[in-house]
Image (cartoon, rainbow, N blue to C red; front, side, top):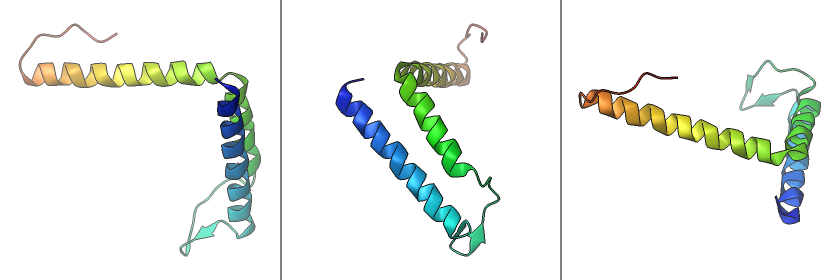
Length: 90
């Protein structure tokens, strides 16, 4: 990922952490409802961001694999709806 991408991901991670901290400081209430969450949400969010930043290509590869599997699922579903024989899933 180019350096500008790193900077953008770091900025997103930092903003996400600040938003989580702000939300937690208000007692986790938005619109009158509450959501049971861990008090460590901000820390967990930052840890996840750092993990992704450590190896962004792993995230890209995982996303590409997810979308490939998703498209295969719909392709086979469509074929079965049209009574076309399909190979078994892996």
